[in-house]
Every structure is written in structure tokens, then in C-alpha cells.
Image (cartoon, helix red, strand yellow):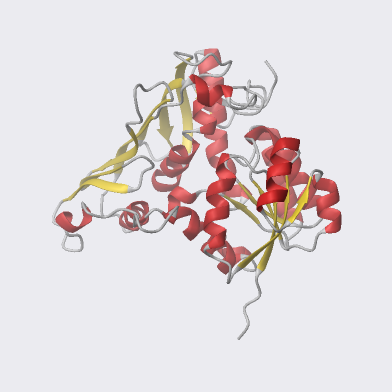
Length: 356
């Protein structure tokens, strides 16, 4: 039986593009790249020399002149919403890198478009959810193996030096980057709300420590969940000399689990009271297979292929993605106002997505 390949039109060819293209090259039985859009002329010239696909400099012309099933948005964060609107208004489903948008207002418009047309599918790249360690933890939480979760901690301790921020003009800006919470820690914040539950209010303090940028590079936040659990977020790109960790810790009345590694991809500690279903010594070894490049991204694309036509089974849709963006927006607002911010209040007027 011949499998119908999903035809992709990719927009953007920056750093994250390299990871996506490598994964897609391993899934040629399920995906076919029909074109790449790149507005940067230098990059455009290199793409034409390197790839056999159609190369476009204009996204509107690419959408009009290409036959494809999915638009794949891999550009800077601040452009995600505008590009999403272009595809969705042309009745095309999309894959979009995190965050779904920097602007909460635009993100809500994307959700409205998704709800309005039941044939449209939106998949936001939340690849951390596919990490083997996170999948195992999610299963344990759903089965209440940890008991009632009362404390959850995220630590994003990464290095992003001056060279990183200077390599692209959008990096470190409120308009197109959004700072450490929106650009780096949003994956871990997504895991917090996915594993623990809905957030009621937040408090945050942030600062720009080392990088010569307008957005923050360091932030600490407190999350109050509706189920009375407390969350703690520590995020920074000012670590020197090298990356330390991207971890999440859950403490419950029956046990504690720490998922560490660079991107929450390795079990560091797994201790549950009287648990016959889990071998702690075996679980400590659990991590994404090193032989599979970008394992979680590959699992993401496999999930998209399987669920493109099944609307009811998409746990990566716009409605789901907006949850972590809402938390980030509330944290940014709290840092500016130096007050506790409830997620039920108006969160539209923050620095996110705006030119400083």
C-alpha cells in the first residue's frame, strides 16, 4: 500500500532549520519538501546551490505557486504569527516552531482560526513532550504514582554569549525574541503546566545580567497552580563558561522525580514509595537514544504524520500552545509591575512582541 507523503513548504533557513531538515531527511517515506522560503539574499543563494527544492524569496508567491499539505514555520519568533495567518487564511495547515507567537493577542487569533475551520491543523513544536523520560513521567503523573504534586521546579541554566546575540539582529529583542522566558524556557514552562496543571497566578523578578540586549537574560518566577501546587522557575542564558542543565523536578506526597540533562531528556532521580511498577536502577539509565539524531524532533514529525487528519488527537494544537505563552506573558508583566499577576486578568499590554 502506497503511503501518501505530507508535502512541506518550509519558511526560514536559520539554525533550527538545520535540525528539522536533518530529521526530515530520515523520514522521506512520509514527508516531501516541495520548497523553501528565505528572504535573506545571502542565505537564498546558498540554498539554491545546496538543495534541489524550489527556493523562494517571497512567502506569498511560494504559497500561491506550490502544491503542499503543510506550511512549516522555522523563522524568528516575532514572525510566527504573521506567517501563520498567511497559511491559515489560504486554508493551509501548519507546523510552527515555539512559541506559537510572541504576542498573546495574535496567538488568540490563531486559536480562533483553528476553531473556525475544522480542516485546519496546527502543530506547535513542543518536542520535549516526546522525550522518553518525560513520557515516562507523564504516565506516572496521570496514574497518580507520585501522589498529590505539591512542588515543581524548572531550571534552565544555559550559556548564550555575546556572539550568539550578535549573530542575528532579532535576538535579545522584545519584538522578535521575547527574552529568556519566551525563547529558551518556554519548553520547560510548557512541561510544568502539562504535568502539574493550570496556573492561577505568578510572580517574577528578572534582570539583564551579561548580554548587551534589551530583553532579560535571567529570570526567577513563582507559579501558583489552581490545584494548590507551587512552581518555581529559574531561567538564565548568562551561565559561564558552559551550559549546565535544563531540568524539571516534581515532588509529590508519594515520591520525587528529577528529569535532567540539557533539555529535560534524562532521568536523574526516580524515587516513589512502594512502587512495584518502576525499577529505579533501570529508570536512572533512561534517556533519549544518542544514536538517533534529534530524537524528540523525529518523534514530533512522526506524531504529525499520524495525526494530520485526526483533529481530536492533537495535543500540540494552538489551544494547547497558548497555555505556556500565557504563563510567560504573565511572568513578564509581573516582572515589570513587581506585583503578583493573575492569569485571569488582562495580559495584552506587556513588552512581548513590541519594539522597545
